[in-house]
Image 1 (tube, one colour):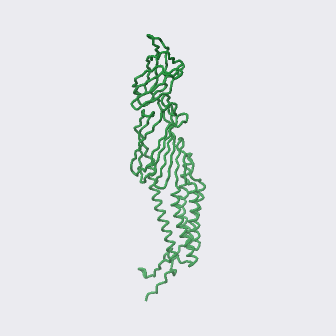
Image 2 (cartoon, chains in turn purple, orange; image 1 turned 90 degrees about the vertical axis):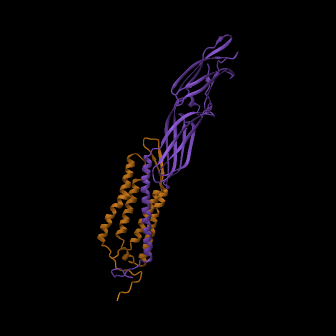
Image 3 (spheres, helix red, strand yellow; image 1 turned 120 degrees about the horizontal axis):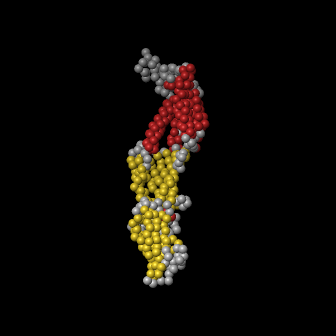
Length: 274
Length: 163
């Protein structure tokens, strides 16, 4: 065989062709990897520029002695690659470091060039003497720990952790049930009971507040009901007379308050009566 | 009457550049290698260091690894017409593999974001596993070339440097 100019041509020997094949393959792999890295870098940059959007958060009383914090979290992935195995965990602690509630979402796959919305629903149990019962009467700063894990662009496992402080306004902040001096009214013992608190929560206290006055031996001496419709960020201060049962003394006893609203029933921490 | 065709493995004529030309070309080729393998990574690491972000790998490791790979690659380019080309290719690939394995051992990068409680952890061991394919292929090529040069010295010159 001859080349167009008439000089003889040689077929490269086998070893030479094998070495050339390896070199060409290495160049192909390198170019593919560089192109992949360039697109990953661009996608990651675009992803970093798109801030996750959280919205529509609200808190309200729910049945089964819970406060529910609900809302949504939208994550936009504008890049070329999906985010697989995306999982989210939130842990809420009070100022003393006591765990109040945990939320877990996922794992989900966030498609490329799409927005994925996660519904958020966190239920904080408000049982008497429970960890979250202080949320009823004490304004405080809660620590929200956020953990997110995912695999980006098939090859890069990523995990992010951060803590955020959130102010919590209590729906019955600085709650007080003060019993006045008992008086004799037409043969019955009557005691004035003053309820005061500040609704520092983001939602209204709407329902009924029932207060049972108990003796030092926890025997019920009398009860009264306060209809409530206290808007957010409003003070409440009302007094009503309670007729005590015959022979029942509340000295050294307690006032046990129960809130009944649309969502359910919540028992507030008892107040001591001097 | 035309000349008989040469046997397939017979070395033909070649036009091997002079040593001076190869040194000049190799030196020119060394510059972008140093930029990509040393200067840009060191600049990026120095930038992170100036922002109080901990580094995924030490600057010294990048400097030593990048310079070693660049110099060996340049040497093998200059000595390509000689029998040292194969062993130098093997050495370049081996150093690259060792360098990537050092990076692989530290392939989970944890960043504490300054002035924030946030920490970010990124793993890139799978990427490095894929990148390792490149020096493994060039290592194989170097070994084959070494064997070829031992068996038939100069056999590849007409194909590496066609007339």
